Length: 312
Image 1 (spheres, rainbow, N blue to C red):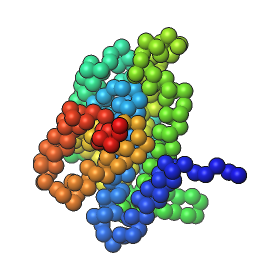
Image 2 (image 1 turned 90 degrees about the vertical axis):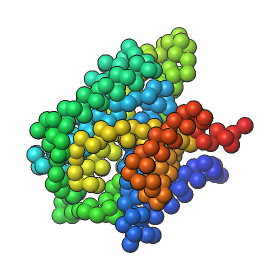
Image 3 (image 1 turned 60 degrees about the vertical axis):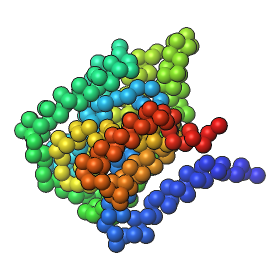
Image 4 (image 1 turned 30 degrees about the horizontal axis):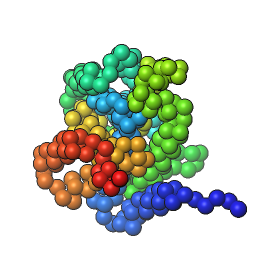
C-alpha cells in the first residue's frame, strides 16, 4: 500500500490551496485581492533573504539590489527595449546574477557585522545611482510600464488587474517554494547550514566555505529579482523607492517572525505584517515605526521566532 501523506505536507497543501482561493472568494474586494497579490510578491522576495539569513547565517542588507534588478529590468525592458514579459524576466535574472556575483566576490572574506555593513553600503551606492541616473529615470522613476501580456500562438492573456495577475504570482510563489524545499534537501543546502553552524567542522569535511557562500548568494539573487519583476508589473511603475529601508526590514521581520528555516515562515510573516498595515494601520510613518520595533523585539526577545514559545 502507498504511504500516507505526512500531516505536515497535507497542511502545506491545504494552506496553499486556501490562500490561492481567497482572491476568488472575495473577488469584489479590491483591498483583499490586492493584499493577497502583494503578500505573495513580497514573500517571494523574502525567500531570497531567507536563504542567506536562515541557511548561511548572514544578514544581507543589500537585497534591494536584486529587488531593483527585477523592477528596473521590467522598466527598461518594456519602455526602452519593447521586450515581452518572458524576456524581461530573463533580463532581470541575468542582471541579478551579475550583481550577485560582484557583491558575492566582494564579501567572500567578510562575515557577520562586516558582511552586513558591506552589503548595506552597496545598497546605498546603488540607490544614489538610481536616484541620479537619467537612464534609470532618476528620482521620478520609470512610468508607463504596460500590464503583463503573455502570448502563446493565437492565445493571449493580459494581467491588467490584480485578480488577473494573481494566477501568475501564485505560480511563481509555488516555484520559489519548490526551489527552497529542494535547496534545503540538497548538498549545497547542507553545506551552507554546516558552514553556518560549525565552519571548522565543515572545512575539515572538505566544504569550501567561500565557494558555498558565493553559490548561495547567487541562488538567492534571482529569487528576490523574480519578486521585483512581479512588483513592477503589479504597480506599473519603477522608482528608487525600492531601495528604502522598509523593504529589508519587512524581509528580515518576515523571515524571523515565526522562526528560521520554516518553508511557509516568510509567507506567513509577510501576510501578518501586511495585515497590520492594511487592516490595522497606524498610518504610513506609524506602520514603519511598528515594523522597526517588531524587528528589534524579535531579535532581542525571540531570536528563534514566535513558535519557539511553543517548543519544549
